[in-house]
Length: 253
Image (cartoon, rainbow, N blue to C red; front, side, top):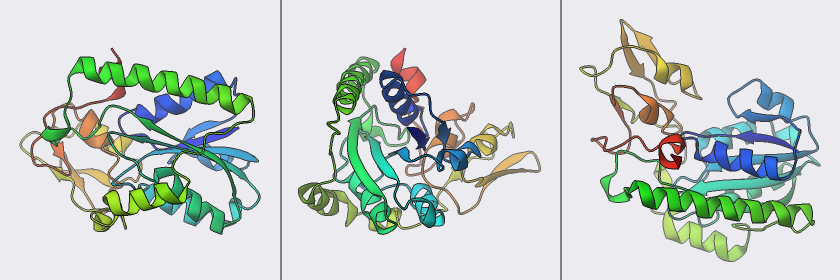
């Protein structure tokens, strides 16, 4: 099985890596923005993983699926979403799109992980709570790997009930946030030192360094990678104040 994933805080990368290790997988495991993702497409069985955003898939993932439409025909696809609270049909959104291109969806797994949105105070949890969330997630992933080895693929987020939950629970209310890339990235020039970490790590190449400062365009997929890894905490997206940078590495320590 090859794997293609989008990860902003490291949560999704951890989930994918752990599952593949439990399966004894030796295939390609690649970030969606890398050249290796194209090599991963050549496999017959592919895992696609991403964080759920407002009960929808990140636009970069949707764009990737649509841009390689002819590559999905006849492929077996297993989907994973990570979420801070609620996913609804997070896997189902990608599953319906992939089916249009002739893919066979083998299953879906929706994993609660620590929230990665550091500029929203209401979502914050203690370090102990986040560590407990990760421990619980790891147990679920290990159990899912056992089921897959036995040929019993989880089907989370793929049912009609999950579709209704995702649609009416979040997606209709926040539809405009996930229908395309966004231009809402804010970079405080008084804090930015022009180190280039944000530009280097942005999966859509949305950030550039000009005149010693970072500047964002309108191709943000809301992965929060730039927000979470800026050494000067100069970047925000959905909120105006950054309360923490909740990466997987910090939460798992």
